Amino acid sequence: MNDPIVGIIMGSDSDLDVMNEAANVLKEFGVAHEIRIISAHRTPDVMTTYAAEASSRGLQVIIAGAGGSAHLPGMTASHTLLPVIAVPIKRHENDHEALWSNIKMPPGVPLATLPENGAKNAGLMAIEILAINNPELTNKYQAFRQKQHDTVLEIDRNLQGNDQN
Ligand code: RP5
Figure 1: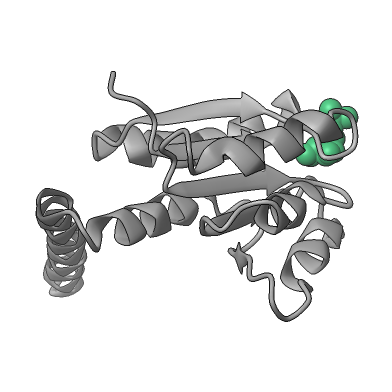
Figure 2: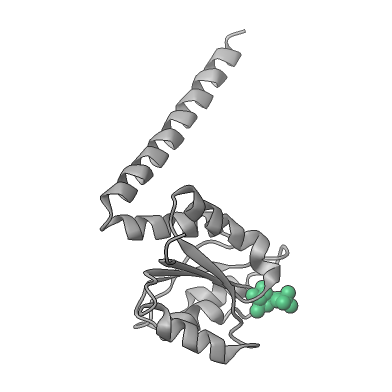
């Protein structure tokens, strides 16, 4: 595999089931990536070093997922100039702390916060960012969107057919 250009990081291995959806998207598009467990609270030194060195190691985008007080995405964004996409992890019905934590960044340090558990779209947003300067990836992404479009048309056609009875 090539050197990773996307870093997927998360606060705990208990976030893996959600964050693997981002990894699956990157795999589908053939984008080299790495997956790391890095906790803003339990391993703050690792988080700081990872973010500070991410760009010089060749990463172009970071996807960061965390639950609870969820400081990992925002603090990572504070230590790098790379775009950071946040995935707030939600575990139960009234568990919105991570969303509120991620979405309330101070002006000057942006964090692209996606919906709770929105790791699939985090992967796709990383593809969009990378595709800006990558025509091959742009073509793959265009094909993905076209397939999605055609699938909806087919489902609708089938529905109309089923209704004519
Ligand atoms: C957060 O605390 C992690 O991102 C995880 O979502 C949550 C719970 O972590 P574990 O106790 O399951 O390791 O920092």
